[in-house]
Image (tube, rainbow, N blue to C red):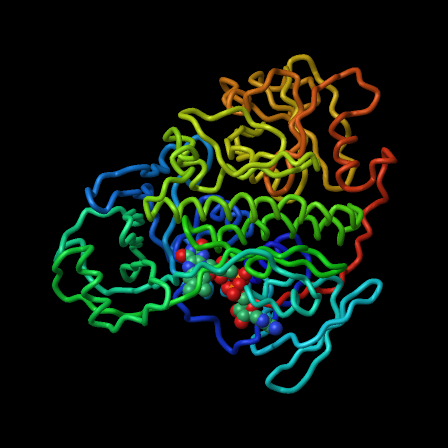
Length: 534
Ligand SMILES: Cc1cc2nc3c(=O)[nH]c(=O)nc-3n(C[C@H](O)[C@H](O)[C@H](O)COP(=O)(O)OP(=O)(O)OC[C@H]3O[C@@H](n4cnc5c(N)ncnc54)[C@H](O)[C@@H]3O)c2cc1C
């Protein structure tokens, strides 16, 4: 998570130092599938082309009954073409993903990643954290304004801060096996590139990675590690007799479901596995961490730029903790039970082809943006439902005055944007873009008239496709955040004394009492540090 978070911070112009205790990136066989929402985050952080080049794209996640080979809840990501520019998920082993992210970070912020730098002590002062770091060349002290702990499940930072974890470890362990085998030509099989084979006795997940096939299955409590021959035999029980198969890697690991009791202590924030260890089912381990890395960087950037008060940082835990604990956590547990054919809630959460794809691609993440406790992870149904506050906005195209296509997620990538869905012919009054971090634009199926003064601040929505997908009436303002979540849905009242979007934004950035904000401080912030690489 350190690399993804660092890419985000660098994208927002926040100086960053990444500390990694090891001298090289991990070669362990760990996560293998990256979900659609993560692809959107990698796109925002400028790393997607390189990641896609190294991956295999998938438009079907197979859910099969092993005994009958019948599809049960298979996911078709093509259902998502009207929701995202990336209607697919990808397979890439984590140990191949990390070097790609590292290359992109080195290009964006040369020297930011410090290998062989182990964090061994930390102390917080009023305006900074002081870190003790051990390197090959001796001890160093580093100061930073904030510390983002991306240091994994055994987080040194979390333990040093005395933050406990709550949850359990499963009695069984999981085993991952990487096989070199040709299932296309030599031994043709018709498996989806990612397939979950449910079975009460022996479930199995089959993943086609760019350079191998991967199997994941449970090892009963106390069972010894299988030998290579036993592994090969086990694989053959699933895929039948095959020529020229070689076991090229394996890993056995304990499966946890644990979440930190607090995610913030002063200037330190927990992220990724340091905050939550999720059963790695439905790819919810790594991808849940990326949701953290989508949420915190823009908040820090707004504070560091002087556009927001420190209170903006509090909502990180408020929004992400329920997503990990009760969202991904419960979903992964339900998926695990479903694999063993235990009766569970998976069927209910997979209802409808669109809802199933939307949920499994992790596009259904709706955040508690207003502290009301309203959040969710699951969408059901056959057609998209209206967008609500907290939802991730669909990434639909609009058209600028010069005919350029503007996707919603790109529009907001480095700013809040208030979109006024109204009739451009009526010359709606827009507030000036003079509040740092907030822009205003009209969206209309009527191209803004040339004498309206709105040509450069209007987006054309032919057929009102975007408004229809959002599902609200005309004269509505959508306030979108940089992470493409809907911060608020507001009525547009042209005669109101104060603009509703400006008021909502100022409240959000902690400046609700005044209708003005201090100008950008334009200072060079101290570097932000974090431990951890993935
Ligand atoms: C065997 C295994 C299989 C998995 N399979 C899946 C899967 O199929 N799907 C899925 O979604 N997820 C899976 N996961 C989970 C996924 O790998 C993790 O969620 C993900 O790696 C979390 O990233 P992270 O950066 O938070 O932690 P990590 O990847 O653990 O990274 C932490 C980093 O911090 C460094 N570090 C630790 N302490 C210090 C220190 N004091 N100073 C400096 N650096 C430090 C470590 O060296 C490490 O590089 C699996 C995990 C494991 C272990």
